Length: 184
Image (cartoon, rainbow, N blue to C red; front, side, top):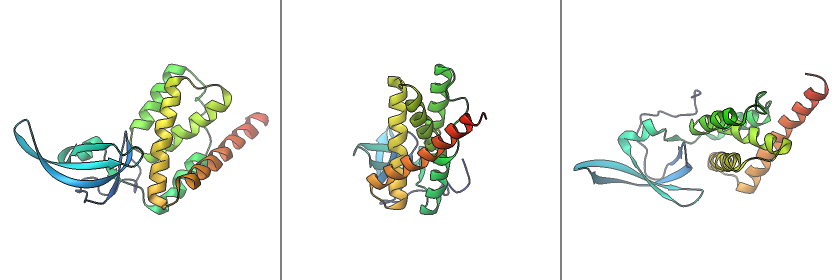
């Protein structure tokens, strides 16, 4: 992952910290508990997800392997918005199966910049053609992860963040249309 998007991935998180799970998005570490599993005592992070209030138990020793990381610092939000405003992938309108595989891999990476790319790609695709049910689900998952991380990093309200995301993606789409019209 890009430098600065994971802060010391081997460190132990503390109660009260906001972290990002690569599949579920931002959550708060509510507790660190000792639990017995298969006869062994292990420490677990008890993580409450911001998006839906769901609780996850994550073994502390597996947190790095799972991809649990600090949320991005506030000064990296601009970088995420720049990814959204940058050009749409050229091959995004290609083969449906390959597209879903590629977008799923980007989304599961845990890299917020790749998640932003997925959001942008699907917003664009939805303008070109109707998304399949699978693609709608991928888009919604990516959007929620992206939105929750920007909200947590910037302390802005969800509505403001949603607007910022749409504005940035609109720049990307306008640029693509202008390039297409110019013959690029």
